[in-house]
Amino acid sequence: MLWGSRFDKALDELVARFNNSFYFDWRLYDADIRGSIAYAQALARAGLLTDAEMRAIERGLNQIRDEFARGVSSTEPGTGFVAQPDDEDIHTAVERRLFELIGDPAHKLHTGRSRNDQVATDTRLYVMDAIDRLQSQVSRLQSQLVAQAERHFGILMPGYTHVRRAQPILFSHYLLSFFWMLHRDRERFADAKKRASVLPLGAGALAGNPFHIDREFLARALGFERVSENSLDAVSDRDFIAEFLFAASLLQIHLSRLAEDLILYSAPEFGFIALDDAYTTGSSLMPQKKNPDALELVRGKTGRTISNLQALLITLKGLPSTYNKDLQEDKEPLFDAVDTLEMTLPVVAGVIQTLRVNVDAMRAALDEGMLATDLAEYLVRRGVPFRRAHHLVGALVKQAETRGVKLSALSLDEFRAVSDAFSEDVYAVFDFDASVKARDVFGGTSPRAVREQIADAKKVLAK
Image 1 (tube, rainbow, N blue to C red):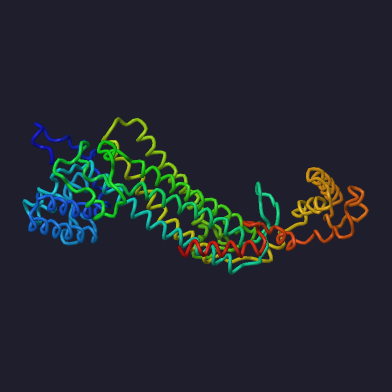
Image 2 (cartoon, one colour; image 1 turned 180 degrees about the vertical axis):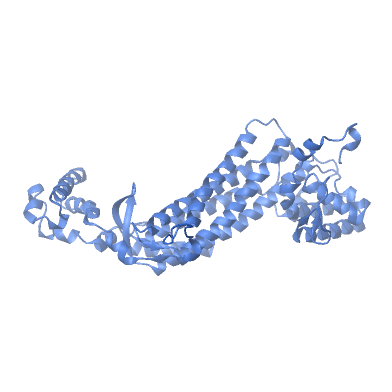
């Protein structure tokens, strides 16, 4: 035990289990070993280790990394890292194993270092690595959205508000709406990484390091952009995890919204798309069923990810200054959020890559009521104020509904009875393709605007 000589009694067995974090924080092993190798080099630069001791420490730590890479076991030597009952956390486990491998030089490694600045460093390295991996997976999903937008360019579908048909849009435009949500997610992760990239190592337990450790060297060696400004803040700051979990939660929300749409659009009542068999399941009772279970789980796991953010914020809200053991509770929500996204993102990318589009069903779902706004705009172009035009077209819609006919079935006399601004060319309004083409503003759904949007999306991905 690291502090055994201070105490007359051993730690209560239940408290020891309560205190132990190795069973989940062992996954920090690579970050812990990277940090320890850099710290050994800094100790050597400060004259606190000989070159031979530093090389022995590096050699031992690299062997421990190889053991962890093969797995963790408590019973099977030779298959990977063999944990011991006294391995309280990843830091004590690595130090214990290092002493077994190289002897006394292992006990010099912790000179001037606390587990407080050590774990803060490890967790920041883990978050930075996780962000890099997630950015790559988000980019892959974005690429699939762009590929489908290009493959099905020109296909029309109903656009919805309030889950009611609103105006015709390009299916490509719909797909790209999620591309830009994901782009914001990538920007948030990149921004969060900047604030994670602050080195705490050298802060000690809370007051700083007395051995003139070169913290700028440590930052360069470990890939941090800068060094923490205050040792008290450095050991307790978990803002970077909260920011990561917020970015993760919002990304998961965007994936959930996409999943919800795809669940609806693949239902027989819509029939706009078909999900590949590889991403659906059957029923244990009903042979005909093809259920979107993968997408439902994407939706369901969103609450789990949001709860991870809430759990951390609740943990942080009442803590006094510097390090407190409560901060051990930061890792399981973090790890769970990373695991969830690393499972979810490839699933959603696979769904998008393999989905099949039912062009006829999308086209058949367009109805002339969706062109009521175009009809109002027709009047606007003839000098009728929009609010007045909106009211007049509403009267025509009601009249058509009462008679059970389409708007285009109304006679010219009926149109002119509502407004003498209508003339014979009013029937040209009832053209879904023309309606879409008219929305030619930057970011709109016109073919020209969507081609431009696809080109911009490709530029984003190329970066």
